[in-house]
Amino acid sequence: MAPLSAILRNINKTAASNWSNFKVHMLKNYGENPGKMLVHTGTLGWILSSLAQVGAVVFNDKISPEQKTFLIPQEIADAAINILSFYLLTNSLKKFGAKLVSTGKLRTKRIRNFLERNELMGNVGKLNFDITEQDNFKPLTDHYKSFKNGVDVVTSTIGSIISCNILTPILRNQYASKRQKKAIANMQQHNMNNIQHPRGISIADYQKMAAIKFSNKSTGLKI
Amino acid sequence: MINKIFNRLTNTPLYRGVQKNVRRFEQSALDLLPDATFNKPKTVQLIGDIGRDISSAENRLILGVTALMTQPFIDAKNKNVDEKTRKVSVCRTIAKILAGTFTGYFIRKGCIKAIKAWSKIPAQGVPKYKTLFTPKGARSTDTEAFKQYQNAMGTVIALVVMLFSNFLIDAPLTKWLTNIFVDQSGGDK
Image (cartoon, rainbow over all chains, first blue to last red; front, side, top):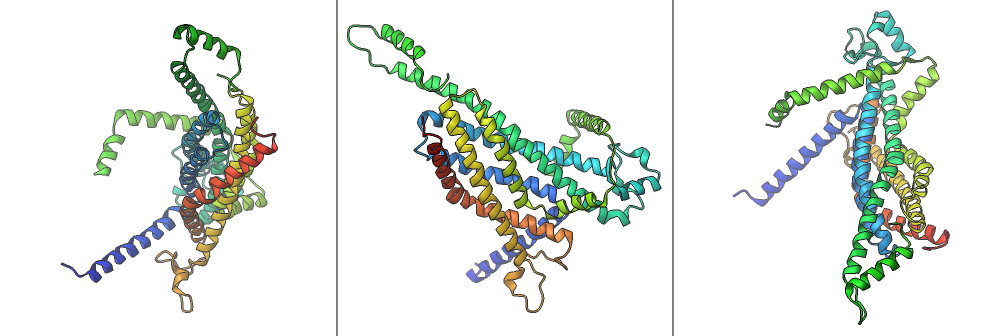
């Protein structure tokens, strides 16, 4: 059996190697792609913050149970829609922005000069055309990367604004209000089933009276 | 093993059909847009600066500010719920945006700053802890890729910090602000 110090040394070595690999992986993956980093870390961030927000509603005793029936599903819907729409929309917009740049559709004056000089203007905007794959592209690399990174960040920011601040609130409200209506209808059904009827009248008659009472009086929430 | 499964999936007629349609859609979208050339050097410089300088912290701030301009109004226009619930919903949305933006921005910014301080290139006189986040083989901290790496690593560390701060700061702050806003707007009536 290996001594404890050797085992610990091994664990330490593995951890150090994993940590080193992780740093190299981060540099390779995100070093030249800030837009991708924004999308990936943004998605992870939304997952974590959604967890906390659901907890905040559950443990807030100043919010009434009726409001919680709306706010808890609102938070869950918010989380699911936020994460999905954030990733799908932001990533798609970012990819589309990148395509605009790589096909030469969106360009700087220098890139345009390059395209004209090499008689490539006829290929601009074609999906299988990639400006970076052209033979004498190398001198333009730094300029192109800087421009593409900027477009990447702009498109991913626009994507996240549309998904998180416009699309999500609209969709989550629709979903949550449907859930609220269902939950309140269930609560009322439960109350009706457990109703204590006064002596002298049947439970069926008493439920009818209660139903009339409910339909005439506002419960504070539209059903 | 995973590669084999992936290859098999991507070779199915269904996948190829979907991919073909996606490409057709992408091409149509590209055809719809007119060509655009940025002629002014200042505009090109600005776009480059955005790519270089907008880290996840600034991105979070932009999202927070635009969220304040849209989300409360969307909640206030939600006619599917009664006025009382709508009011609490608006108060909570504002509180959530303020708390989330505040902690999100400052934690990200702080972590990115810390990573910048602890990812120096190993050299004589540089303490070892200041190279804790330096990737193997890095030669200079002045390259564009290295700066983006620092932003990315700072953001990842910030997300780990936010695992705790979401519960310790965000959630109580949201609750406290919600209650203040609800009271300020006439209470839960």
